[in-house]
Image (tube, rainbow, N blue to C red; front, side, top):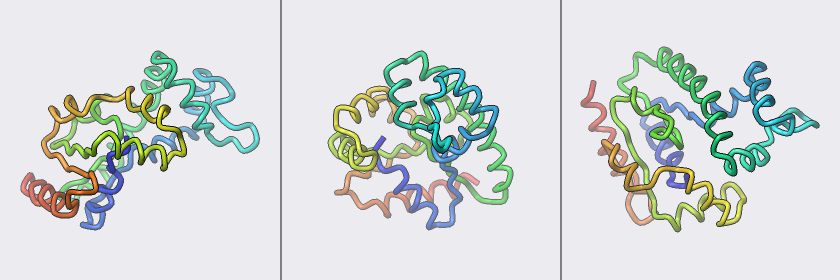
Length: 187
């Protein structure tokens, strides 16, 4: 969280690399009627707002980030759907040299296993906390609690084929171009 994955993905996108945004697609899948029914069974009717039927993201986050079992069960519902959606999306982009899958918990969910290479985007903890706090309008303590639910930087690095440092002091574009050239060689 807060490492700047979306910023890095936008640079790849500018290079005409198709980017699948797992988090955005997952949010859309919450509105599929069967999924909505299962989410309500797991989290109750307060998972969706009564006035407009939209996902109550804050309410869901409060429930799942305070209850690891609920988080596991929600992930078990959503992750297979995202995996299928990604597979369908890849089929539509099969003529591309490569595609990217942007996801916050790619390793934790096991979704990295079907990929040819893994790019880890990292930034120091202070920068990440600041970004999360500003982006999601949450206090630092909440941001820290969410970060604690994720894998450590050291462990994440152990899975990486490429690491891009997005700390504001390293030039981002040359790092992306280097990885891009490397990925073009995989074809």
